[in-house]
Image (cartoon, rainbow, N blue to C red; front, side, top):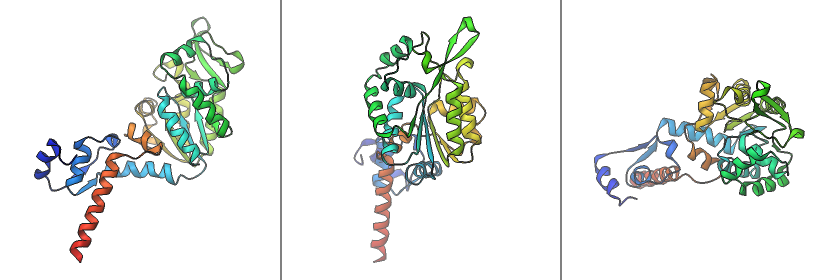
Length: 286
C-alpha cells in the first residue's frame, strides 16, 4: 500500500495522518491504510470513541449482556451471534426479523409460503442449518418470536397470530405483542444491550409496533446500550429515541466485522504506526 500512486503523491504533503473513518475501518484501500504505513498516524475522536464503545461490548460487557438481532441482513446477524455466544459475550440473543424466522425454520416450523418464498428468493436457506447448529448448542440463550403480525385488509390491517396458527397465507411483517413482552423483560434486566436490525418492516405503520416498542424499551432501560446499523439508527430517529441510546454507532460493516471477531485493517494499520512511533522514540532516547 505504501508504494501506491495515491500514497506516494499525498504522503510528502502531510506531517500526520489522522483517520476518523470508523465506518470504513473494515476496508483496506490505500487512502485508509497506506498513509498510516509511511506517516505518523492516529485515530480521530469519533474513531476512538466508537472503537472504545465496541470494545466494551466485545471484551468486557457488564452482565447480563443482551444482543437484539433482527433485520434482513442475516449474514451479519449470524456472524455476530456465533462469535458472542461462543465467547460468552452474550447472555441472551433476542432474534427477530428474518433472523428470527430462520430460527423457527430450523426448529421445523412452517411459516407459510409468502415468508418462506422470501427467504428462498434472498438465498437465505443455507442459514437454516447454521441456525440449527446454534440452537443445538445454545438453546437456552437464544430467544425467537412466539407470535407474529400479518396484514389482513378484511380485519382492519394488523392481525397478530401465534405459532399455533402457522403457516400463514400472508407475509410475516413484524413480531407480535407476546414476543415484544418477552423481549422487553430481557432488555429491562440487562446490564448491557446491543441492537442491530429492526424487528419488522418499521417504515410502515402496520408493522412498526415491534421495532418501536423494543427500541423504546432499550432507550429507557438502565443498562448501557449500543445501537448500530443504518436501519437500526434510522428507526431510532424515526421513533424519537436516538438521543436516549447509550451510544450510536456509525460503523456498519466495520462494527459487524469487529463483533464477529475479525480484525479491522485500519485499526491494525494504526496499531503498526503506533508501534513504529514508540520504537522511534525509544531509539532517540538511547
